[in-house]
Length: 296
Image 1 (cartoon, rainbow, N blue to C red):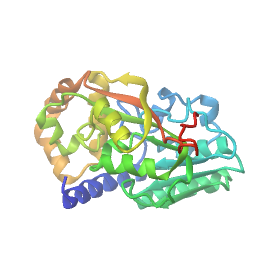
Image 2: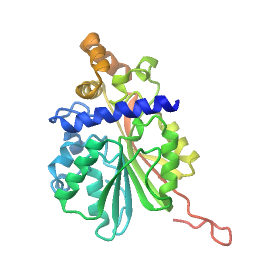
Image 3: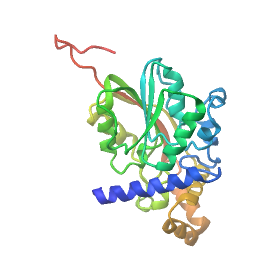
Image 4: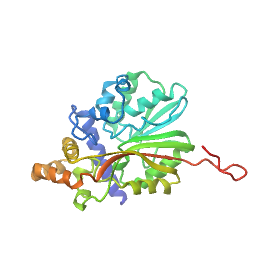
């Protein structure tokens, strides 16, 4: 994808999420038919964990999983959250790593960053911060983080190969990533080209194989899928419709002209071909002086 096209995609995504975080709860990317924020209850977030977070962080979650649910994040670790949004995973990470660790979020949308900083202040946590930037060019030092997490964000990137390279760059040797994301297989061409389905986390999704190959090409090892949740037609239709409130005028006009039948047709066309997956990989440790690989 050409640079100008990539910038246009990022601008469209950023505008949609700026609108989403500013409106009352009624849906969001990857949230399926559920209201904005309620998807977190279905994505592996324990209720008792959610109850410790600022309500605004929970209600403004647009993820498709809980990338920290099965991770081995420990006290003192440094965790980087790609596309940290309003901060739900950032705050959970900050609690897990404790006062000797650090949680860093990166987001490109000013409104999301402002909301996350509000939630950090409300939480009282002093080991969490948010930086403005794009995930294809992270404002983070090389080999500086123990974990990279992300929740339904990389699928929105127009340059995913750059994201994978950046993940490998910022991880410490032996550092790991655990990312929840949307993947897709065999989507019709008209779905891929539909702007309404891009911010819905569908049109821009790649296959599991492309994802794993991309991680390995970036220099990461042991890349694997740890769990999956396949979406059915009603869930996908709700996902598409929920995002129209935040879409551009061009997309809303398409939806109004096409009608409910188009939404149903789109959902039926991709049912069983779109799912959320949790990806794991790690950065290799350097070889020892004897040329032997140091096991994890």
